[in-house]
Image 1 (cartoon, rainbow, N blue to C red):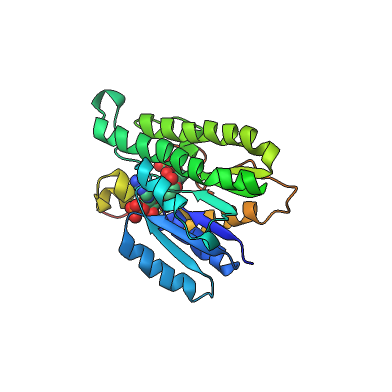
Image 2: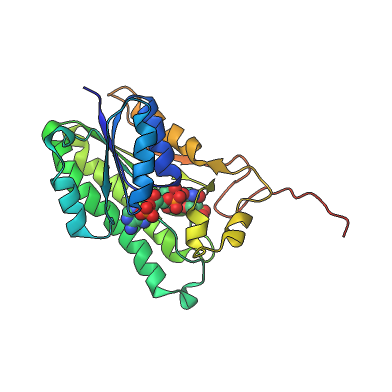
Length: 257
Ligand code: NDP
Ligand code: 8X3
């Protein structure tokens, strides 16, 4: 029987690339997100690789919907081997004193509470079967705090703490927990952060070669494909031109005017 992975936030970026990587490696997939049309398009693409795919459209912030979506999986989909907690976002980039509390609530509810709701729904099955692997997508923002990053950094520091906590609680049950912390990856992340301002989002990735979603999918796959006695606890993965949350080596071509 193929193994089953559930990936949150599979409609874009790192989650979508991870779904493709798992399908290449023969996993059946439960792909989730809020944009149903995108889930259907991705399902069709994944099925070309001869794997089974189930879509579940829900908002990870809604505890009842998370419980229903995962609690009501068909029997043949219940035994989830790998959970990739990827759904997340940054909203806004401003000082705390000027922060938008709606942005704060979105980030805290998605990146922290959403990750918890999904893990709470999936992990008891792993414990019962004494087998499983949870991959949390953290961030360099969970290792450092940078100017104007305040609340987003706090949510990713929470993911860092929760990854350690989960590892302690799940180690007696043969459930592995890995955190992967990327630096700059060009996805829809900055468009979302800047509330749809694509010009501002593009500038984040100018002057250097940033990571692409497939780079992080490779890291997820590396962690998942280790032998059963090996756990990758934590990976911090940066573009070669990025030294920290804020230090980049950017090169721009000179113009005459
Ligand atoms: P994208 O914006 O491209 O993808 C984010 C995904 O999360 C989408 O599939 C989106 O789906 C889903 N999502 C967001 N909110 C919710 C919600 N409330 N309920 C369900 N799904 C949700 O960004 P990335 O791929 O870059 O981001 C993936 C993860 O990687 C995030 O946790 C992010 O913090 C982290 N990360 C990103 C970095 C980067 O530079 N890009 C660097 C470090 C970490 P939908 O809108 O359909 O619900
Ligand atoms: C995304 C990376 O540096 O924009 O988590 O916070 S950063």
